[in-house]
Length: 376
Ligand code: GDP
Ligand code: MN
Image (cartoon, rainbow, N blue to C red):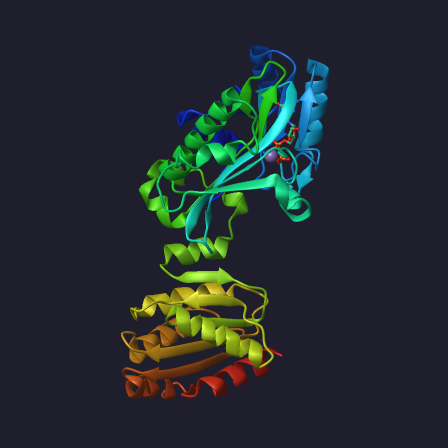
């Protein structure tokens, strides 16, 4: 889950990171009032869940009330990577001397947590990594919870000169790790961390991505999810306990088990088709799940055929068959259904479906072939 800068800033503050004072505004009048309490100049920052706001004109320094009102309108009218700007953060402007980059994230390939630090902050860090990877420095925790102080000095020397800055960098890194652990982040990023003309350090942008699988541990954060950025079908699937990922093909898929679901998508591809979704109805064979899955898939106007591929183990084929019949009586079907059932209670399932004149495949390849043909 991604959260907005103004929300991430609050988490930063709780964990001891130095943040600029500010507030978010939806209307120009509110922005004006915030700026008056902060004092000019202020920075206006579009709150959208995407990077590159600066480049898109979503970050502007206002020196006067007149400028503030003009920029507020301009930013409000922007669409940044397709997203409208609902709220604008108003913060006291900094006098930037140097911009650094700090992040804590998971390196999945290495199975470790890594701190990433660079003196080339403020700009698009992916581009820095591509063009001048030597400017990006990585400190792996090597499986430890915190920073190994024996290894740290050698690392920090590459980026910061002098013991005072090195000490500050350690404080920032420790606080950022606190954010990372406390909120089960997959990423906690400061870009930029600003050093001003007086040598004061301050975070000027805050990015926090929270691991969805850990959200149950943070009931207070769950409300921060911005529904404007979520796929409605995926949200509904989650509520129905279905693992569902929307894709852009036209063969709808209902499969039990993640492995079989992936194999099914592979075979659809191999046979020249394109899956419209990944969907795992899971191990239990509650007919309700099939009904919910079909309802979500049928809503997708790109879908031209639906393939149900069940290998019954714990899942009982007759339960799936009942779910299919239930769906047929309750939902409007405008696309053909291809059913492959094999395994536990296969015969009972066949009997149920054949009574309704529905064809059943036992070979996965034949079923996929048929579904792909029908989608053409
Ligand atoms: P991003 O483009 O979405 O990453 O947005 P940022 O919040 O990082 O802002 C982009 C750039 O705007 C920063 O790298 C800074 O150069 C500048 N900026 C951000 N905050 C301030 C500020 O308080 N004062 C000044 N002068 N510039 C700022
Ligand atoms: Mn930034």
